[in-house]
Image 1 (cartoon, rainbow, N blue to C red):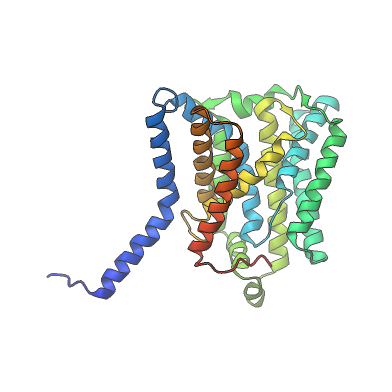
Image 2 (tube, one colour):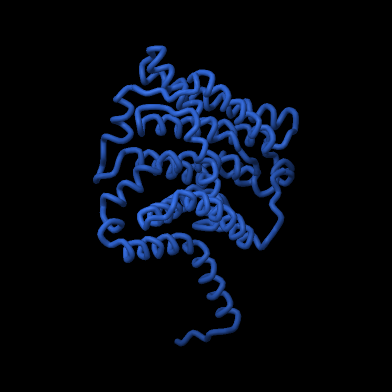
Length: 332
């Protein structure tokens, strides 16, 4: 029995193919970028040493991008995430090195501090009804000052080697454990968004707050939870940041904010197009670092990194808008 093709079935097949292409376009672009640099630099780029270095070195950026992803999903911005990373990393280093706390106590205190910072963001945004851009920018600047204060504007070195060992010295398949921590966070977040009530509420609120409120969802509670989760994840990124070098610098981590947003918006064009999602963000991070690593190995000047990240953010936001059929972004 033959199947008769109709214009409707052809149109449906084309629509399915288009959607599948949209889902995996970024992944394919990453693969093509890797192949390009492998052809240009066969003796240096296409080695397991380079690949393992790229995977392991970006765990901090992965977790930071996932941190800002949570409030983005609910329709808010967290511009204080990088400042939270730096402040909690510095607090960990100061408490462990200068105050003599155990590394376990310092890590736990840093994570709790991250949750508290997220709660402060939530309080000012939700109680006073101020836009999240303003509050998180202000709190981030305040945290920068606090970081300089507790560190006396200097790098604090000598953090317990137990943390360094757990983050970068121990390896699996030649890749530092930091990579697997970032991967685990992405998988847990994917599961939470897809299969838990809290995750589905977060997505629902991001799609339309008023509709969610009319359907009985406590919008303010969901948004407050997203800010707290963002603070905890940013603090976790700070813990990994300290563990990468065994020290904390008062300013260098701030430069990660732009790449994190670029990765999050790039991720919104992949896997689940039109929606911020952790798997797409993970791909976005490694797409960006593949480009930066390849250009650096080709001898590009230092300013190329800023050009690449800034351009990537503009392109990412533009592509995400095309996927959304150019609907105006509504962030409450």
